[in-house]
Length: 230
Image (cartoon, rainbow, N blue to C red; front, side):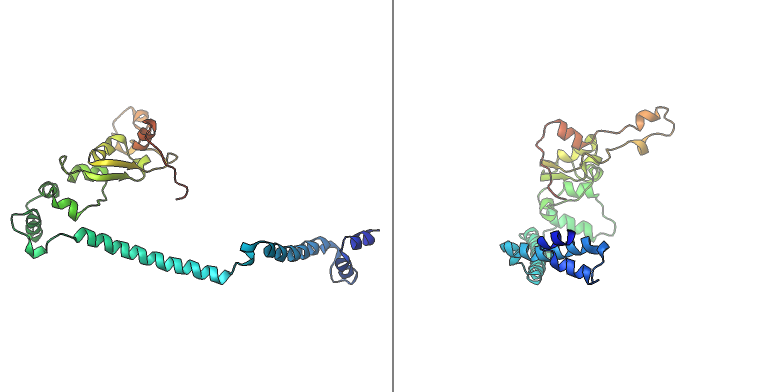
């Protein structure tokens, strides 16, 4: 009965292997699955043009070529940015003494500069943007080093905005034409735990989470764009 049914379902080869002792009865199910997969996989690959024409080594070579070209593009992009920044700037020794760049050169040559960084930036309203078109600063550094009447940047970008309180961000926002606020609302919000006075009795109030600039931006209805990958 069982043997005849197995043979009728084209399992004669498996039956013969079991009877010959090549496959133990307890392993018959695993042997059948293995044989089926070995038959099914080539048939499936041949039925799909994409899979049929796929070549592993060719694909890996294409990935490697892309990586090399991508590295080359990034290197050239850096050189292009440097060239664009330096374009139009005079030679160091060719700047007049009473010009903005001349004042900067004079201060750099002093062992003890007579002007602070904030004063120097304020004294270079035209040249500063050419020398440093992109600045990486914390909100505190912005308030400390950039004068309030400094020429506006094109855009200010807040990274990890969920960690920045609104009042810390206002000064940076006021120094640019546009603002991009980047952050994850699921991360921990700002806290005033380390800023409280040890003698304060209202400890619970001081330990409360603070609102971030990311929260304020979302509540204000500013357009939101979600990243598909990070």
